[in-house]
Every structure is written in C-alpha cells, then in structure tokens.
Amino acid sequence: MKRFFLIVVATVALFSCNVSQSPPDGQTYGVPDEDGVRIVVKPNKIFSVDDLVKAGYKKSKQFDVATVPGAVEVWYGFFNKKNIEVRIFESHETAMEFGEGPAEIISKKKRTGLIGSSVVSPYPAYAIVGNVVMLCERELKTCTDLVAELP
Image 1 (cartoon, rainbow, N blue to C red):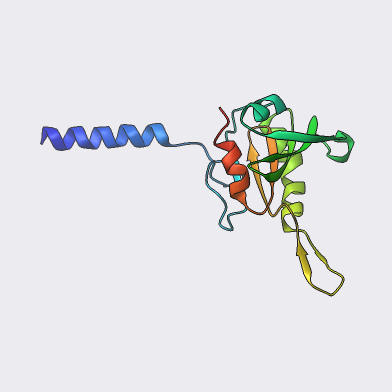
Image 2 (cartoon, rainbow, N blue to C red):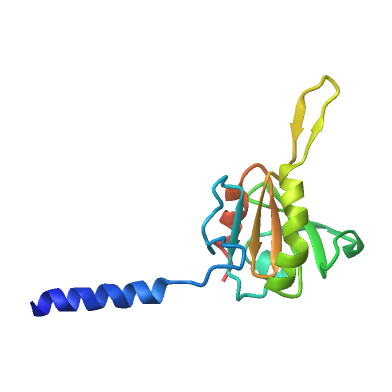
C-alpha cells in the first residue's frame, strides 16, 4: 500500500512540474498546430540575432524594419542549408501581436504561375520563439532544428 501511495504521489508531482500555461489563443506551447505549420515555444525567452548566430544561424542580409511593423530587426539567413527569415521583436507579446498575423499570411500565400500552376510560398511554416518570428523554408522542421540549438 505504501508503494502504491508513493507511486501516485510521484506521478502527481511529475505531472505538476510539466504542466505549462497555454497561450491566450488556446495553442499549446511547444506543440505544432494540427497542420504542422506553426509552433510557439520559449515564451519567456528574449533572443538577439547574436543568440541565433551562436546556435548556427548564418545571417546573410538585414532588411529595413519599416517593412515589418513592430520589429526591431529583420534578417534573412540560413541554417542547415535552408532559408530562415527572422523577425525580432522586443517581447514575446509583441511578436504574437505584430508578427503572428503576417507570418500566417506568408505561410498560406500562393500565387498563380505563368501556365496557371500554383507556386507555393517559400515559407510555408513559421515558429514563434520567444520574441522571434521565424519563417521556415519548406517545412516547420527547418526552424525547429534551429530552435533545438538555442539556450
């Protein structure tokens, strides 16, 4: 009986430690959405482009922040030979408020080709990582591989 009680207490304690608060929109932190194109992680972290570079991101070109409202820096670069555009905001809340909508639009964007074929956006997925919005080339894994290298 003691053993059963200890197992129950240990299980409850472990579960309690792993429960995280969900974002206001109901998205669970750290879990991709049902389409596998969006993830929100590390909401309490603040990252700089230097943090991304230390994790292996190779910045290539800096864009004018005037084109991305609310952003303090915008970079185009690479990680594991795949393109990732990063949009850095002052806080996670600002990234969610100003970065999520445009990232959603970009990830769903299609345009008609010359012969009527659809051309899919080069960034069909995105990650919101603390104060950073990452636009991911080809798939969400492009960004989650970089996220795995961040502190």
